[in-house]
Length: 337
Image (cartoon, rainbow, N blue to C red; front, side, top):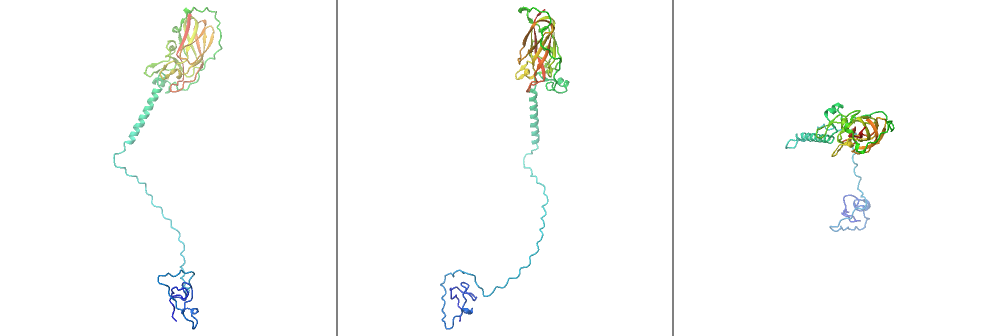
């Protein structure tokens, strides 16, 4: 009996094994169970037409014998501890080479020049803005420890307490005729508790603050003292006996030059008390006004007038702020006795 080339059951081309690799049927001539019964006719199996693909396998194949066992795998090598990789050696930063062209060594010098120019400009501006009649001279700074008197802290001046207003004990005096009333200021002199040092104005002209400036009839001149004049006493000698009818005062430094308002820059007097020879005392309240503020006091016979400063404002504010108490003018009106 010859072994068929194709499976008698499914027509798949047979290999060398005892079973069909496609349907698993025993191959006649290779497996005893596939031997046909004696006398039974053997039916020839017609191979499939050329070009027809065999059907795909539908279940696992059975081999003629078990494949040889694979050799045992060699034992795994014991794990080796990882060796740390040493860090790369330190490399200093690479400074890029300067770009070709003109050297830049002039840049720091240019910046220094600009800074110096700015500082000089700011200093000049401060000097100009803080100038004027209240700018102390070099000698003034030396006398005051190097600081302008306007900015040096001062304590309030202490003086005798102001007594209540009163009527004098002198005999009644007939009032002078209106035509006989004249200005008596020019013949007076003054004694003051202190005098601030002089300075120079913006045009470098000397400026003084002597007591006689209160009696010269010029509001742009002034007597002033450093600090708070509250409680200070000024004495005016009229030079002879007079019948006094009015007194008056400009209660600050009345000089104003454009933006420089020295009346606001210095302290101003808010209240004074006038005292005459016979004990007459009259308190005068004052307002912010750069003209003479008069008040009637008589008629009273007297040879001198004592002025008590009762209330004084704080120093002025802003660039022109100064810590001085100032009086530009004092006025006396009446007639010879």
